[in-house]
Image 1: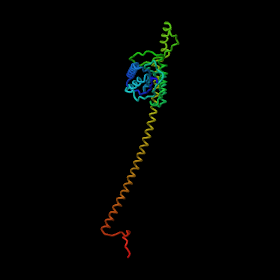
Image 2: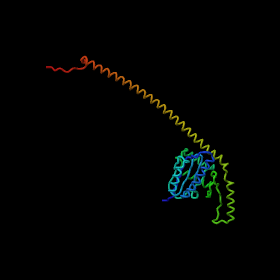
Image 3: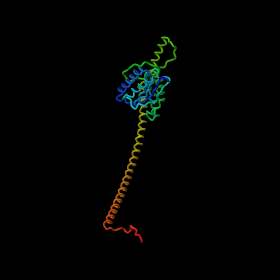
Image 4: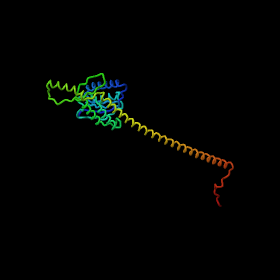
Length: 286
């Protein structure tokens, strides 16, 4: 059996603070993940938004399990939920120690769609769907594998680079022309962060509104259930009070009856009389 293992998980984003602090924390997560993953042969991809993380880890089983255990202990992750895990035949992200995707408008729309299908419940997310989404976004947003260099600012998406098919050993002049073309492509095809920000913000607002509406409906339903339970409890208390009154009534009647019987017995002993309705001993006839 192949030792190659894949794990897909989602977790709540517990990063708090202003935007620059969140960006710095996210950069630290990426830098640490890329450095640690290279040491143990783990590759994968990470998606982040204002509410959750989604990540794929793949590599040797021990490396994947150790990495995931470290993530579970990280206080920046909450409600860590495994969506898929098991052996696989090949890596889906062989060239990325940890790709970072999903900040584009398309990525946010895909993530919002998966979240809506699950009812915004991490446990109901589809592992295959999350993997396919991350794999497609990596190919779209990151293009061919590029070296990752540390940066102090917030993570910036790498725009896709389109290159034409080339011979195995291109001429130096041809390589120069391709490098120039690759430098021009991002400015022509990749939208700026300022352009994507309103679209991504609108998608996030739509998700939050939908989630708020669902929570409001749940709150109304719970309030109605609480009212029904309060009515049932009050009715039960009334029934209990009625039963207690009836019990006390019959207990008092039993006490009075017992008192009368005791008095009658005492009177009979005092006078030596036998009640007429009580037959005496039978007399023998000679």
